[in-house]
Image (tube, rainbow, N blue to C red; front, side, top):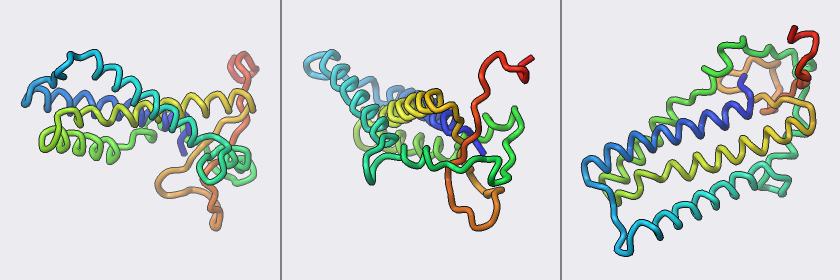
Amino acid sequence: MVRYVHYEVTCAILAVCATAVSAGVVFGVEGVPEGPRGVGPAIALGLLALAGAAGIGVLTVSRLKRFGERRDFAEAALLEETGAVLPAPGTQYRDCVNVPFFLCLMASALGGGLLWERDLALWPLLLASAYLARGWRVARWERCNGLLLWHHRGRPRLPEGDDRNLYSSVRRPAGSARDA
């Protein structure tokens, strides 16, 4: 099981790393693209695309019917009720790294940048923007509700017949007796 916010932020970091690798290779082989009117309009368009992707990321964790996930947050089962075991402190970050996701992003950005258009080497930044916006929104929800959201990946270690995807645990306030 991994923290929902940790997974979102890790996916954003993987997307940025895939962009760095693919852009380095593509721009090293084919050269840096230049627009006919300079780099200003290209940068403005890129920032607009990143803002749009972040907006879509926030919408995916909203309360919108058939589009947002926030209703699932409120219905998340308590971990104490399901008997699920939280991961050890060191493994929760390692389990967040999604290597197939990174390889797919890198391959698609490299392929798109080398075979079609050099600018496609930067497309994973759009996903990074969306994942960061999702992570920010979910972290805000957790703070407001005093809960931590967990998501199980891979082989579930939960009771048979439980098809829920999200689980919650109580957020411990800073400075509590457990922190001493």
